[in-house]
Length: 323
Image (cartoon, rainbow, N blue to C red; front, top):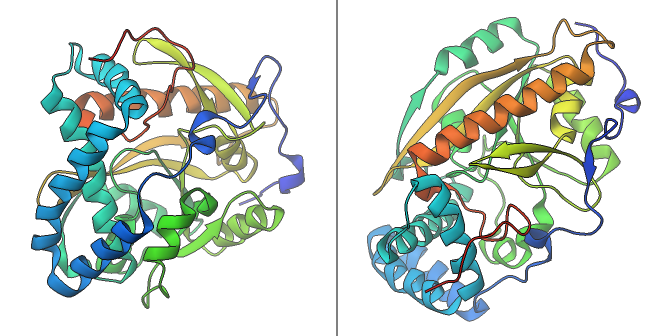
């Protein structure tokens, strides 16, 4: 398969939108006491997940009460996703779902995959990509758990997965959770560096899957304005442009938390750039971003409490006052 050098990846297309400064999600300070997180890690690892989950209800309640800005923005999102005014129970449920996936991340970083019941939908897409041997992009979102992919890769023989992410955005939590990755865990590729893109290309050439989240813009990265839950929002175009330049298939991926220890991983076809010409690239990239947003919107409506963007995603959309 012929692939173009990454230097050929263009910037934003004519008319594409760029952020003038670091967006809200990157600028937000991390919340929470380091001591509280340390104690929670101790309880989770030494006394077990059941007790840790009991404590988690109180921690989620604390942040629900004392994070009014995040609560206000979450309410605006839930109003769109649910199609009605969210109740306090709806809003707390979203916070607890987020907290549950953070707790489970602790176990996943330590290879405790046996704690989870993971079901998979669309696995045939992964098998088809494996048979081609050319690798593929797995584009996800802050919808459910990105880290649950490590459990999928561990359980199923064959798929080799590398996860590309902005690791600096979870510095405190990462430092407290941090540990040497378990044997067989996916490679982590830190984004924001030139060598990161080169490593992504190498992984794809080796037939690996490269997972990346594509629902947040960052700094002055190129972005496209696409209707999402009833109003235009910005989505980064970089991941799709890299996939187009490398002429790779793209699969939409999400790991939805379904309560208790259950996760449901979904793979859906998104785009195939293998036969893409230069002349058709811009239209194909735009169409792929629009399909990505449509799949994300479908997931948000089906599992609304699984989306974790606690800031003004629509950048100024009217959402009313918080109760």
